[in-house]
Length: 131
Image 1 (cartoon, rainbow, N blue to C red):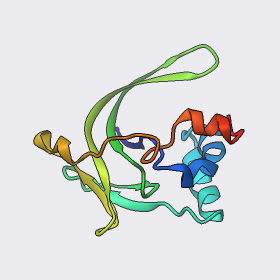
Image 2: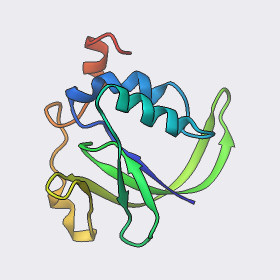
Image 3: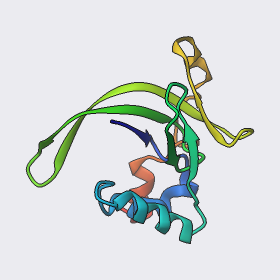
Image 4: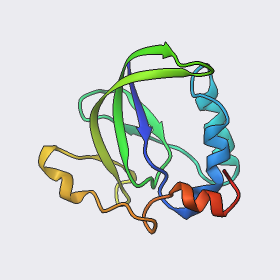
């Protein structure tokens, strides 16, 4: 099974999505609810593809970074499940083509530095009273 996970949220403009994205797991229809709730406040998800797979994934556009993972197993973690995954690739948002640009081994310099101007951090969420 391959899944796509954005990491982290892009910037302060997406901070209002944290309660939506963190409310429930993506399993058992949770991802569809998250997609619908994001769309209600103007943050529609888009379909992107993997370089190696014909499968399409829906992601939140404009995230600072994306990782593609392969689920290895799920194990109990007390009051939640813990997923053991293999990271298969990472990417960045391509605003021109409106998709994820998957980075190759030598492309890491195309990943911008992720500071508080480029990515959403927990300090900002605490300041805004979200967490």
